[in-house]
Length: 241
Image 1 (spheres, rainbow, N blue to C red):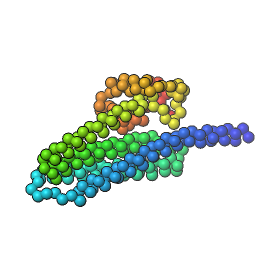
Image 2 (image 1 turned 45 degrees about the vertical axis):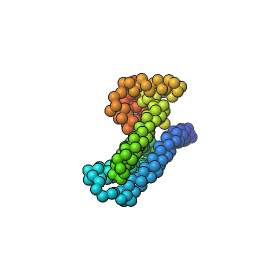
Image 3 (image 1 turned 60 degrees about the vertical axis):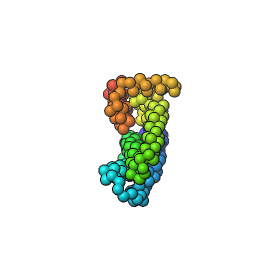
Image 4 (image 1 turned 60 degrees about the horizontal axis):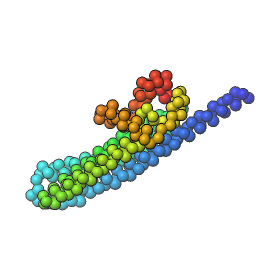
């Protein structure tokens, strides 16, 4: 009787823990679906730029080649984002649902890094899409019109990059403060509270110590970065299990 009660308690606890991680899995799955939807739209626009335009005669061959190559690059990057998002939204929940014990943790951790990599491809494809539009203006119109269009598109590209960095910095969580569905041996991790101003100050202090390469690595591989920070702070015994 006691053995059965202990087993039932253990199973109930495991189910409750999995429900916490399921929220993370659903969050990353929804993010992948959102990225894939927008990436498919942009890839369709880029494909239209290859097959539905008529290039006037007498244009510079180098300029035409650059336009076609950049447009194909934009389409390819967005298609990579579409494929990555589709595979993650299909295979990630499948691993968590049908895999052996511990598959939920692996699925969530892998989904986090893969969806960020997918968004990275989406962002680079979006930049290439703007350069494609600039080159299209120089291929299709006279130089005065092309110059005006290039200035406007460059301003929009700068604006998107500026607002992306501003919003990302506002909502970014430093690796030392990241909380996941895994239970840590250090209970103080879950009792820590922080307001918006303190979070912004922590982000600024963290970014001052990071190079651009380290920040890119931190964005693409947040789980390994957070584990490294926890090992440096608490030692190997307190790293996430």
